[in-house]
Length: 519
Image (cartoon, rainbow, N blue to C red; front, side, top):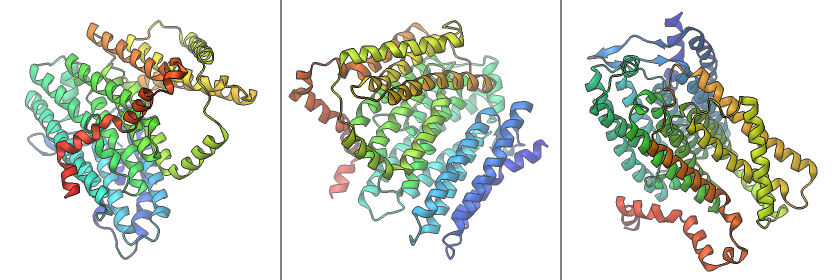
């Protein structure tokens, strides 16, 4: 039965791989139709696989290779859940692109490239050996490069692809260096054996270096600042590519950290670095995204912030919460890009029908009080703060801030009672869902991820600083006097935010992109 399941789980990746390399150009609809069927097959098998590994435990195929390096897949609770999500998002993207690319002269080629990219993502998640992990990591990057250059004649597409290529190669070098150090330390490339030795307490300065290199590679893959500018310039690609990029490919960085959580959690310096990088990018994306006039650019900055938040959660040792956030972001961002046209219409309608209310300190205090009451009620159902780690308390406080901002709308003047009730109910469901889903994922994935470590004094101080920064960012504008909001300094800050504090210009100069674009 084990061999049958391992063979079945490879059917969808192999089919997508075949579509990518052997598509029929004479029948433009065929690659897309096959890819849709492959995704449905993958969904069914992934569903069965998740149930099987939850009951029977992890599965691992026989190694095909030499010197313990080669092709080997591993199926466990963690990647089974991710594989289900990948197949579902792939199905949605393929189905959307069927109409989106209809009539395009290169429709078949596009569907084939998309299928190849999905296949490499599937192999990356299923990797049970360091060599397959490295090859699929590199392969997804090169497949994305081809998709970014689908309309090669567009100058902005070439500019974005050039910058992305440089950043990706740096990430490749960092990851290969980390994997080489791990292989040198354990003399094995099988993930199961590596994790077993890490759990046994095997540690050295070499592993510390490997953890730091892996954090840097994941940060670059997850478009963390200041190497994020290429993501803002990929708007020339077809919309299905943007959806797959933001909902799937960029997740490789946070997934790598969660997959190697036994390594990362054992190195305080790596966790601290992860916390710093993630928190800075999360704050940056949260501050800049709302100021963007273009919806896709705003979504790109949002992705930077969300990926940073996921890495920050991993830096705090909350790997189950990081995975929950990763999955929620994937579905949210796929929907946002595929429905970006209707989102623009909805935004214009909201702007027309709902004038922006004046910030009110009294309404804000009422919103904060109501948010605290909701959290107190949910925590009471959960058993109070007992058993809740310091890291989870910090994250809960950040979510409470977001809930306060949401509840602020319920105290606007003239809002209907039914709408006010629905906003309060929605906020309550958000808080309740977070704790329930986080507990469920933590319970389900406990054998696959590292336990939440006790934070050091430095990590606690940094996490409190992050909480303070989120508080100022979320609520600070409501405390500003009206005269200051109308001042030239405030308007200048808005301009700086809209331009992302000009970090893109700095990276353009670093890569020489501006000079080449103007030549």
